Structures are given as structure tokens and as C-alpha cells.
Length: 190
Picture 1 (cartoon, rainbow, N blue to C red):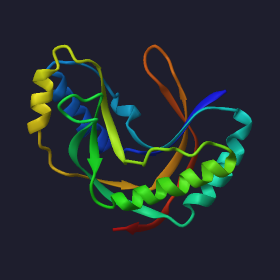
Picture 2 (cartoon, rainbow, N blue to C red):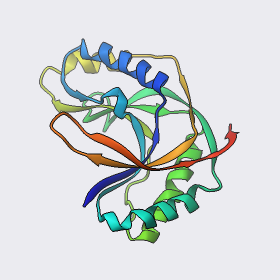
Picture 3 (cartoon, rainbow, N blue to C red):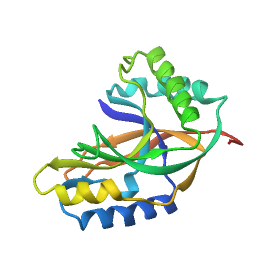
């Protein structure tokens, strides 16, 4: 079995900006497992442990499902938390522009995955970029107060492709390997 997910990846410049933001957050305390910049992405569908023999079928259906989607201009706009920023389990940033297009893309991918044999996700899709996962609520108040008032300028981003990624979990963190990259059409949806 191999662990798979389908995602929009983040370009290097945006990774660096979020890396600097995370460095700032770290200085406000709390036990949080912050995402390594090189692993930042927006998960469109988590497939989990998958039979390697299914990879070709997944690639075929994935290619069909995104064929009519244009590249997407968007921007990261604000911080959020699941379930909220007062007592977050996950700290994330939201997509603003063309969020509805990203949701439609995720829905098309969801249908493709169901066609291959994966279970339909019961939760509605919320496009977001995970920045960190809270490991303990001890000593978190300084960070949550800072997050509640934190503002950053909108960060524009272009999504030009969808990737099927294999994730290998290690003690140092996950290692990602792209198994397939499907380019979105060159015209931008704006």
C-alpha cells in the first residue's frame, strides 16, 4: 500500500512568505507542529493507503476530471482555525479569489475518485492551506491572542496544475513524491 493525495501545490515565493509568517508565529509560544514550507499544498482529495495497482486508473480518471479546468488565479487572504482560532486544532489560511472554482475542481476530482472505487467524502470541501497543527493547549494563549489580531496582505497565487502525490511518513516528517502532474489549460480563470 502507498499513501496518496491529490493537491494544488504552492510556488516557491509563496512558500517563503508563509515560512516567514510561521517563524513569526513560533515566537509567540504554544506547542504547534508547523508545516515545513517545502510541503505546503492545498489538499483536494486525500486518498490514504492505496493499492499501487490503482495508480494508473487514478491517473486516467484524474486527467479526465480536470481536462476542462483553466488555470486559477487566487489569493490567500486571512487566517482561520478548525474549529476556530480561540481553540484551534489546525491553523490555516483561507483562499479568497475564485474559491468557488477551487471547490468545483475538488468536486470533479471527488467524482473521479469515487468512479475508481474510493468512498465519497461526507464533509464539505473547504479550500485552505494548513500552516500548523496544535499539539497541546498548554501555553497557547499568547499565540491565539496574536493570531486573532494578525493581518497580512493578500498573497496572490496561480494554480497551474493538479498533482497526484505519494506521501511517505518518516520521523523527520513526510516525504512527498509527485506521481502525476496534470496541467490546467493556460488561460486563467479570473
